[in-house]
Length: 92
Image (tube, rainbow, N blue to C red; front, side, top):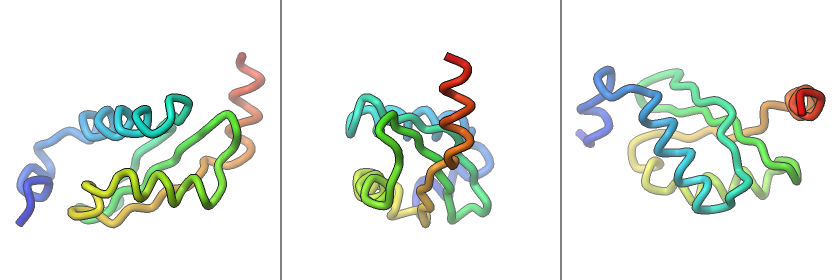
């Protein structure tokens, strides 16, 4: 049993989200973790955004960069979709 499983339910997802955001900023300072979902104790779903857009290559790069998490979780990395980007740009 890994450390992440041991603290499941006790380790706040918010702390995990902050840790992931810091790792993403190491990869690319413009990467933003928009949302983090934990559909099960073995899975994490990440929604990322980048000013240059999010494509399959970026999702793969993020997945590989978060390799330490892949030991404990299955990762799903995707974009929140074009509507999110449009809404975000309208707010600025």
